[in-house]
Image (cartoon, rainbow, N blue to C red; front, side):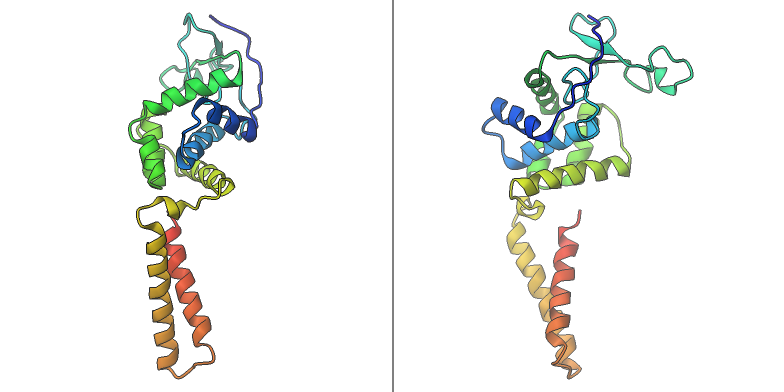
Length: 214
């Protein structure tokens, strides 16, 4: 059933609240991953239509409510080719209904939530692309956007990406210790105790940062 397209901006606080109301036991990583998907799909919530939090596509002529993409009847727009872009998107009566459907679709993306929970950002994103967007690959730009939103939400929740990875805290301490030891050895071997600690600290920091990056 075709309905009129109506802009329904979705703020991140409202999005987070809707997800939590639907799945109160969802962990921080899964919550952040779902929010990141919505933020990418709706351009930070500003391009959400008819409460479609996940930009879930629909089939033309479907019995469920949908709105038709503006490029559908534009032969000059490459997206009017159904093999290149969806021609319709689902419409919902409210945010909660749109979020519920988005989460159901994400559940069907094999490994998405599991990989996000493990802090494997790139693999989680690729699982989302394959299982949710139904594409074989996505651009590095899209990956960067998703990772940025994912990490931003984790930060709001007080969780570091490294904390999600197996033995993340221990690995970080080990990396810092290795960097500290190398920096100290180089400094003091050259008899420069005055800048030994500075070099040691730099070595520890650079090693830790190297482990933290995706």
